[in-house]
Image (cartoon, rainbow, N blue to C red):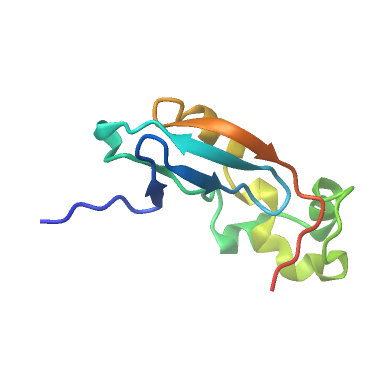
Length: 117
């Protein structure tokens, strides 16, 4: 029997991994600590707080432009990118802080350019 953890990356002791935030938030380079209770894994990202449909109904291109200020991104396509709005996702800081028994943060990366292909 194989047991898997959906939405996870491998975090055996010493394993390096990337935990990305949303298009407007930071990304973390982490090192696994090998917690057997989590099957030596950790989350692979911030995860959604809103579905894509909810985000399109509740968020605006203007609010997306505000949170993306200071970055290079497809600002002319803001209306099309609403479902990727950082407010539609959980806080990457909280998600990372909640996993200190699974990983340790090695580096924090701040995006200055974002491109959605």
